[in-house]
Length: 324
Image 1 (cartoon, rainbow, N blue to C red):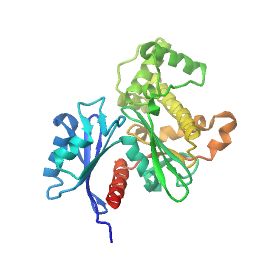
Image 2: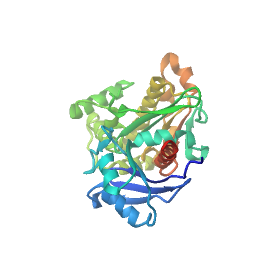
Image 3: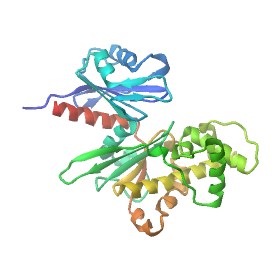
Image 4: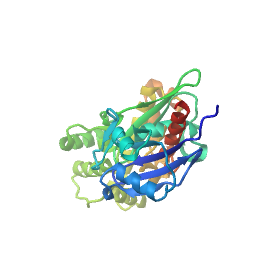
């Protein structure tokens, strides 16, 4: 007996925008964006989607991804007023099932389906299904997940809170900068530096170490000033950001045994992909003493495909339909 083609609501929800698409059979429809602040809850936003772009469809399943840990089928968003509760979403929309998952879990499920033109290489060859693959990413925060493959084709995604691990330095200059950050933040986690807000923190820490007065800039302005050569502090900020990112990526590869590749997701890295490729990222990735030759064989790349989480969400929806 053939498995019926699934129809499902797919959502990738951030602090500012919620993106929705409809899976109808094998096709994922256009991604539609709604401002989170315009709706009291995810249920209200989904109702707007079903009354508009998805009018005429009656999906039985919803899969919603958002930043944050999932506890008992619920994500409480730290940077938005929404709480994603699978039970409330299922009841509020009269669905057969609803699933809430971490946004990097959705990216983890997408990894095997990403093609060469979805990726911007940072060295080490082409990622593929030759062992565990990891995806990490600076955005509003810092996410980390991995997909592991077992013999026989079984697969699983490991979701972590790796962004809250402690960031380490590799030079006296970095020691001084992290000390300046610690005086402000107490615990200098990876996310405190390798994120949009972290880029701003890093910029001001460099200025404090050098006793410089710098203009206030948001993260996009720091990147623009760095790429344009308009500000030495911005330039060093972006260079250090890339170096720290490479060190963290190398640690991820070693910790998870990610020989299939370490991919960089999130919305920040694609803005300066060429700069990142020319930076110390790959050198720092491989610079792990006796394990340097091990890391030299591991590919690294930026995910440049728009809305890659929907690839993973669609895969999970089809799998759920196959098991129902």
